[in-house]
Length: 321
Image (cartoon, rainbow, N blue to C red; front, side, top):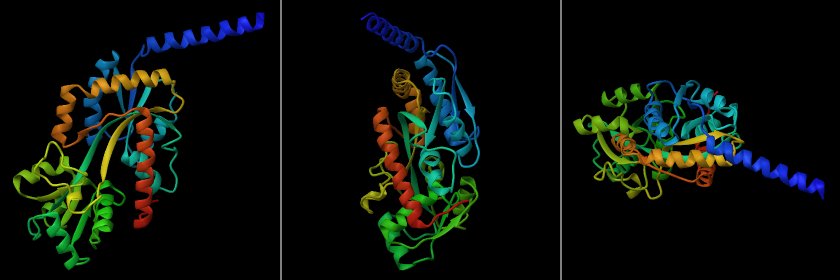
């Protein structure tokens, strides 16, 4: 009986310590790993979000850029970090769902090595064509591509990029043959389409907005299932190609093994930060959608996206070393 009493007291004390620890969290700055270089699109979004998250958590958020190797370097660093809540990580479609399928080996498992916290945003690509292309709608473009198989040049930001995969999925679902032209970067891709060197691209809406407005590119549709709130006059490609959707996303993760009470604290702070008007305005200007989720919903979403991108990469025969 005495042992049972002692054991019960120890268990109660342990629970009390955990509660106190959760209430005290965070008691020092939190490192925020961004697996892209400073100045990149994800970095700018992460910094805008970190500012709001700092206020929601009541603690400094220190952005730690770990760019390189298609976001693999930073993602590996996040996976190896201590699961104490003082390292969080912004993962996305490239690092968590695309790179693991493209490369023969990466030093992390996107599902097993991370504790999902919450989705933050989704962004989509725009199907844009050079003004010389005689198509003013997705329907007209599909008809043109079917009439000229293999003649239209589809630029991308490189093999395995989201612009490439958007196009490969479109080719499969619209039953068209477009000739892929990989560039070394998104900037070179934009120049290539603006000059007419390539006929079309599936570039992020944020990079196409300026050229859409000036008429230097003709944007036919967006890769979301429905029209974006920021661009209500731009049709969704799915209105012509039923079921078509290809979007990138960003979400917050902690290393696997992070205590559930700390994950819950982070989740609440993330939802509060996401609801800040300044951050919502930022996403709106970028043509992105604000998305929130529970940790369980993010886990389900991640597993589905890993499968979707893996299946697409294998069916298209895309390989990187």
